[in-house]
Length: 195
Ligand SMILES: [Fe+2]
Image (cartoon, rainbow, N blue to C red; front, top):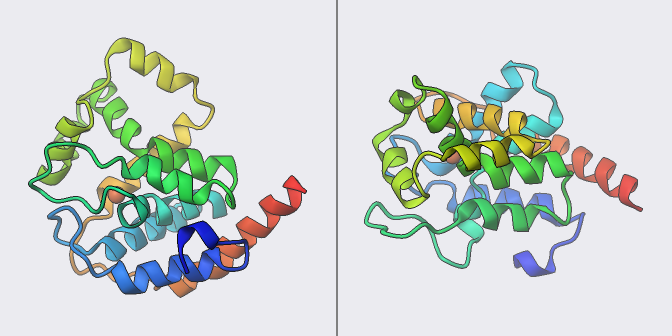
């Protein structure tokens, strides 16, 4: 199964396979694997009773690391691999705009928070500081204003904060299977609305 042949009944099994087959990979030099990282984000969102769409966004925000044409991140990288855009492209045919935009904006949200919240930069891991430099650094005033015009910018900031928090080694989370029915429900609801 490739990303180009997916439909509404195969996208969730595809995502499950990505978590199982690729999820144990190192996550940008962080002390957690990439699957642990995304599952921690989803669990944090779920604990805050953020709702199905935000939990889904937290769960899938880094999926583009696996599906991008430019390969996965390495700490030796000197250019950005645009996993935000790649993830949004994968999800856009199936998921509602809130989820797609949160995935697309989660890097922009980091740049936004660095520009607008003096305490936020201190929360970044060293790997995240490295990628920040590849991603354009903190936003300037014009970029901040443009970011605020996106109707989902507040949700993207929430996903970003769970992203930052979800890098703790040894934290137990539910498995991907716990979230699979929720993902299918979100897809089915959205695609029914689109018909
Ligand atoms: Fe992340």
